[in-house]
Image (cartoon, rainbow, N blue to C red; front, side, top):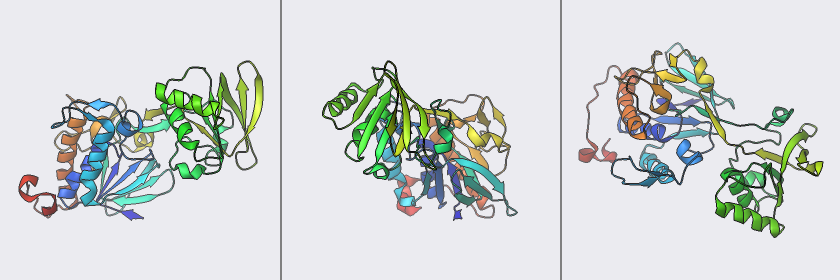
Length: 334
């Protein structure tokens, strides 16, 4: 059982900044995210997109903002459980919560801060009849550790940046890489498309366009992918792993069943401290709603700051909280 002061659901920018604000109050944080790395949408969807409304930065790339936030929270040594979805919560006799993830990890905390952005990102799955029976047995929707595919045979499906980038990367890691795309044209960056074409011409990968995976075979684990070509019909490809990369879809997920007040897929909060209707649970960032709500990272940072102050009072009702300026004390002084 992992124990912490504040359990943060969502490791996007608002969740990361919460670590900093809580750290100034000497509160320990642990973050849970369904994505395999911190940063949320900024890392997963648009790491190279410039952001113009972060104070002090006329322009900053989304990925660089995440890098800076990670550097900023280093002194407070937060814990991370990544690649696991927040599944269920249980309230204990001492009023603290135990969260269980999709992989069975259990985390105990007196305060939960939901900073899940638009919700947990779930993979868009291809319409293959027996797909789910091979999940974690050769089918993966997110590549967490490329070394997992070292000297293996891998079939990747998709036509966007993620499919192209991982095809390029795994060409030097896996024993065999096959990229399957249902069209001839790709949606990804032109540079990546050209690199994939060169790898195919050099015989370093197999490139199959106008084709799609339609079936999976294996006894207990994945052994073969059935691929259907637009003109040449079906054939079987022996493989160890099938990785369909068709993007991620944001959904509120299991959080919707936690007894929280929800309006239009967003969690209602009190703007005094961004608390929900369940004592000890807060919601900050794009996942919450209130009159006048603006879905901006800047606003999420403000919400995280006030939430952390309230969380301290909830955890330590008998302690006096005195506000201090970092310009006077520095980070080390907290």
